[in-house]
Structure formats: structure tokens, C-alpha cells
Image: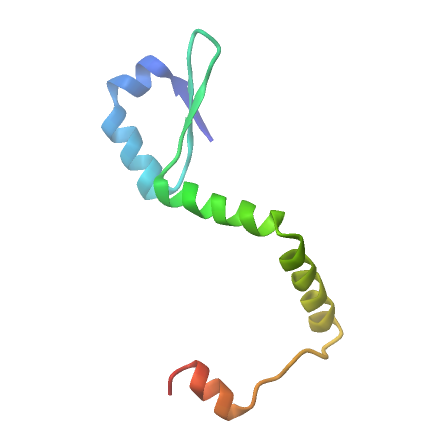
Length: 90
């Protein structure tokens, strides 16, 4: 994560905001008062919120764990070719 002073951020705000959006790299802006802040794109923030939602959902996480065990044991569900074609809209 890039870190810079609030003065440098303010002087080059467009450049840094474009970088955050284009490179998906958050920036930590340091303030003299000690209350720093993070600049992150709306797309990345939304993605992180979705990830946190999934991680907090115990039922969904247990389904993921069960699915992983099925995958590791090679005994998961295998769709038919017809079902695959429907899924892939062929």
C-alpha cells in the first residue's frame, strides 16, 4: 500500500485518485494529527464488502467447506452434457 502525506495527496489528488481506480491499489494518507485515512475505489470497496458478507455468513461458509471436502475426495456433483450446454447457453 502506498503511503503519503496529506499535503502530497492534496497537491496531486487527481493523479492519486486515478491510480487508485486504475491500479486497484489503496493509498494510506498520513496526517499530522495521527488520524490517517485510506483512499480506495468504489469498485474495490464494494468487492471487499461482498467478501466480508460471505465470510460472516456461517451457513454459506459451511457449504463452501463441505464443497471443498467433496472436491478433495473427488465425489462432487458432475452435470450431464445437456446440463452443461444449458448452463453455457449453447
